[in-house]
Length: 220
Image 1 (cartoon, one colour):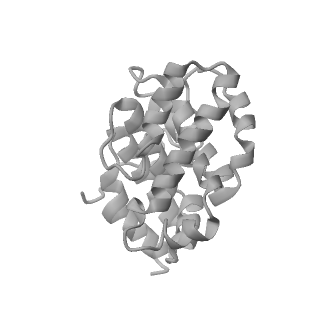
Image 2 (cartoon, helix red, strand yellow):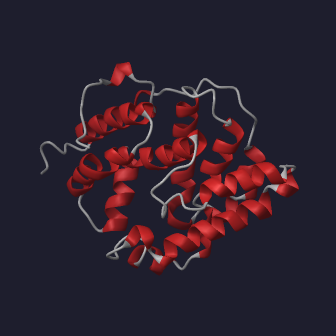
Image 3 (cartoon, one colour):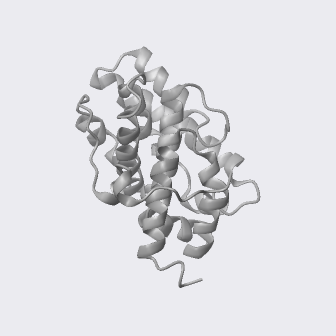
């Protein structure tokens, strides 16, 4: 899918223009505190909150989705990286020939489910909710197929942070690429992987703003 630029900043509620999610949902601060030990690896203390906000923006458009399961899934989905060797994360998870199906990608999904099963029940979440969350976490990187709107929103939110300057900067560092190379990958590959039309509109606006801020039409 070729990325199209048909929206402008003021048209689309997104983080680039300071939008905040409008929904009123269950407070998850206790979960954030419980997973704090797993947040520093792979910049999860930046990636997860930003992706969480994108998920809530998408939930504003999809009242049919289970907001609790979706929000817990995006909050927890990458916590498993904390149990993977950091050198392997880069060498195998980002720079290997088949990075998205690498053993470390599978491992971080498994450990993410383990962490969810460890932290959620003591906070009062039912087995049904925990297993619904784990079903989304399991395969979110390694299985190209999504299952249901909650899974779709989580996958889209996980990708949307990459279209911001912060996500582009970390991607350039992890993949060993320039910002311009990351921009081209976003346009040529990642945008086409987005599932919901709302995510595609947000990605378009976010990337257009990033290109402007990082002067990527000047610094080739």
